[in-house]
Amino acid sequence: MWPKLAFLAAVAAVGASPAPGSVTLVEDAARTLAAGRHGVTAFSLAYRYTEHGPAHNVDRSARAVVLRDDGAVVKMRAFGDDSNKPTYVEDDYHLPIETKYLTEYRFTAGTAACDRCPPGAVAVDFTSLKRDDEHGDGTMWIDGSPAHFVALHFHPSVLPAHTDSADISVAFGQVLPDLWDVTVTEQQYNGHTFIFHGWGHVQQKQIDYRRYASVAEGLTALSAAEPAPSAATPQKR
Image (cartoon, rainbow, N blue to C red; front, top):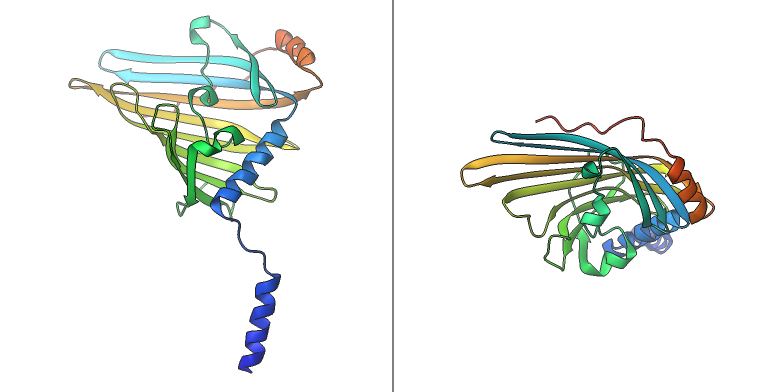
């Protein structure tokens, strides 16, 4: 009986595919994202910024359309006052989701749970090798075959002036039949000056993804575009 069990175990071991390592999993997901972003794509961006401090409150929103070519931003058309032009999280941070930034991070197996992720999503912790305000340390969750990113949570390696803590989360979803991309980004900053404390919050929604045959076609559509129908809603404090 024991030899038979040993034989069956050996057969199972040969037939089973080993789980990919953390680095391989991230590389696969980054390649999936790059393949999906290939070509000319655009999306509507709904942005809202709220800030609270002693005798100082800000609440502003903006809408824009972003045109990309192979994942690189070609043009952003903002609606409304230019002073309210929205920021773009991938301009603010070198996120470890693009192949060109992967060498700037170290990846290890993670254990953190993700309530909004599908069952079976794998956690991978990342640590920035560059300690500056464009990088961060956190966890990403990867799912599917081919692998794709479903969520990202991190803290900047270096905090902005007068900031005590910063917390950034990025959610991904299937935005086109062949593309999983960013859908919602939340950024929370808490800080103080002298004895005065305050906070700032950014919510960015990316909706209405579409493809164009060329950059010229995309620019023509951009010039005729209307603002996104729904604005982002700030997190209540």
